[in-house]
Image (cartoon, rainbow, N blue to C red):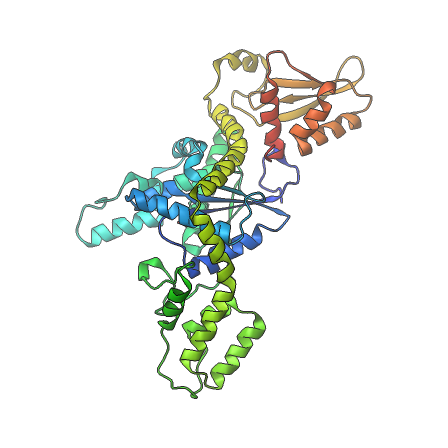
Length: 445
Ligand code: TRP
C-alpha cells in the first residue's frame, strides 16, 4: 500500500482515491450508475481515504456561460450529497477553493514537455479536426485546452493520490500525471506520489434512450433527478423493437434490459429475463423499469430538492471541505515550493551550514544519533534540513525509535502529548513543527 510513498511517509496509511467531476451539465442516470453510485459505495470502505471535488476550473475550458457553471456546480454538489456522500467521511471540495491547485499547476508546467502536451488526446482531436477542415491547426484552441492535463495533474498530485478511478478516455491523463511526478521527483527529491489509474471494468456503460451510450453529447440522457412523471415519460421513450405483446423478446441488445440490470438485483434481473422470454409487452416492461429506478431514486430525489433549495448550506459544506483539504494542501505546497527553491531567504544560513548535504532539498526526516553522554537521541529535520526539534536522551535506541514511530503515525496528536519531552529549536514555530509532522501522517489534524 505504501509502495509509491516517499521514504519519510512510509507509514501504513489508507490508500487515497481521488475523483474530479467537471461542472458542466446536469447529472444523468449514466453518471449515477457509472460514477456517483460506485464512488459513494467506495467512500464507506475503511481502508481508503476518498477525495471528491467539483472541477470548476476544468469546466471553464469548455464552457463560457457563467450562470451555467454556477448552476451545474450546485446541481452536481447536491446530487453527490443526495446520493449519500458523507462530507464528514470524505474530503469533498470545489477545485477553485484550493489556491494550491493553480500554484502546483505552474510548478508542474515547468517540468512538463510541451511535446507531451501536443500528444494529449483532447488537444490532438481539436488539431486533427482543424487540419481535416483545412484550418490553422490551432484555430479556436485555447491554451486552457492545451494545459488541461497539467491542471489535472495538480489536482491529483497535490493530495498524494494513489488511485484515480477513471474511464478509459482518461488513462492518458493519469499517465501524464505520473510522468510529471517522476520528473519533479527526479529534479527535486522524492515528494510526489505516483498515481495509478483504476479502470472500473465491471461498470458497463449505461445505454441511453436511443440505445447508444448515455451521454449529453448524444442528447439521449435521463436526468437523475428529473421529476417523477417526467422520468416515466422519458423511460416510455426508450427504443425497443417492434415485437408485439406475447412475442418472446431478446434481452441481448435491449437498452431497456441493460438499464434495468444496472438497478436490479440478480433475482430481479432473472425475473425480467423470464418475462422477456414469455413475451412481456414493451409497455409493461417499461413500467417495471420505471418502478425499479424510482424505488432507488425517489428517496434521493427528495433529499436533492431539499439540498438544492438551500444553496447556503451546500456552500457551507464546500467551505468546510476546502478547509479540510487545505489543512493538507497548504503545508504540502509549502514543501513543494521550498523543494524547487522558492524559499524563505532566512533559511539560507542554516541550510548552508549543514555540511556535506546536497544543495537540493530532501524530504523531512527523523534522524537518530548517539551523543558523547552515551545516550540515544533523535531530531526532526524539515525539507530544508533545518533541525526543528530534538529529543531528550534515551537509554536505548529502541526507546527513541518508539517515540519516532508515535510521531510518524500520530503526527500532531503525538506531538501534543510528548511536547514536554521534546525541545523545539530556537526560532522555530510550533506551527512549523506541526506542518512538518503532517507530512508523515498526511492526515487532517
Ligand atoms: N477530466 C475529468 C473528466 O472530464 C475531470 C477531472 C478533473 C478529474 N481533474 C481530475 C478526474 C482529477 C480525476 C482526477 O471527467
